[in-house]
Length: 210
Image 1 (cartoon, rainbow, N blue to C red):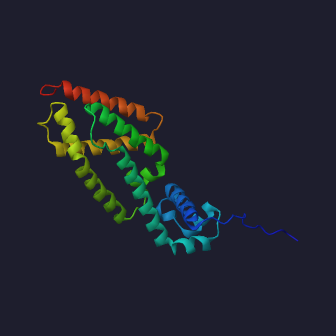
Image 2: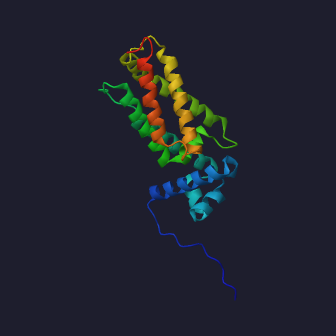
Image 3: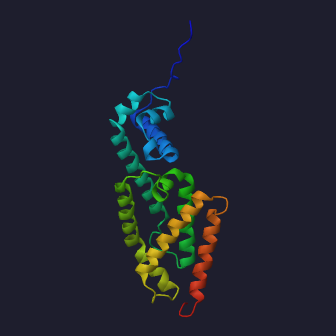
């Protein structure tokens, strides 16, 4: 009699650990197949678990997607928070910028799927996801604008528009992350840090600078 293929036995795990396992699987499925490919069946297959486990944990695709987006947003915000300098700030704006950028890009390296979801959204990304990213970007600008203003003053460039400088910095960081995600060997974190240090030094030496 032909043998019947059986699902590999998976030992019981604590509920939260199982939930994280499923979210990790969902992120991999989303990263490779986009939102259209994110199904309960696909996630169960990726995690090597029964579909009932996914349904028990999230209730369905909508609950799974909501939980996944919430976790990835929190993960990205945590990485940004770790990269933002805390007072008292060092006297050297060059040091502050290069250290912050290095920490941020290290966070990107650890969780590239998270940042691809945010800055290289796959086909079929719901409008609500894009709106959330835009809203968080605006909050980030408001949070770091005082640091940018401090840095400009330290370099003797306090006459520059701090708000516009902050928007330019955030846009540059986002593009740097995209380059690091799509061409990691060509654009390692050290290259960005070195460029940032040279740029700050050049601004400080410019007419009207320190």
